[in-house]
Image (cartoon, rainbow, N blue to C red; front, side, top):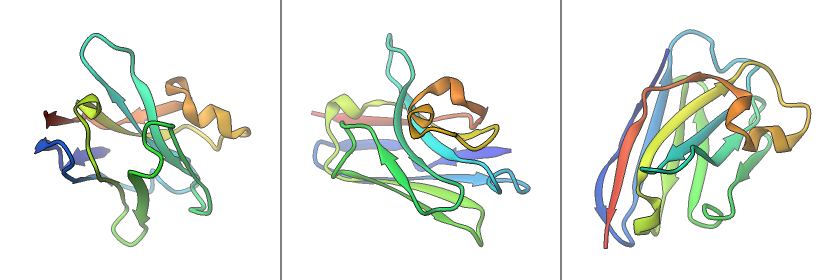
Length: 126
């Protein structure tokens, strides 16, 4: 139900835009996010957006470089990534929570998300 795309190989300092297309109304009434997992590391939070679209959240590593947006008409969430660094190399997953997070800090936790896309590989060369 969640199809992520847009990953690829980019040089340090480059940009990529990831897309997450949802089937059905999975985004309706649900908070959504992007998380990533590098080899040998745990899955970590990158960015999230409230289902209302009025609040966005970013990991410290993403602040000022990444932007999460949503196109309701296309039922798609995007992650614009600029000034990419080798440490951004990971598989990126879009995810949707099973409900609305009562506290924003839940959005930062992988356990909050019930629905996951298949992941898209981002590789940043040095």
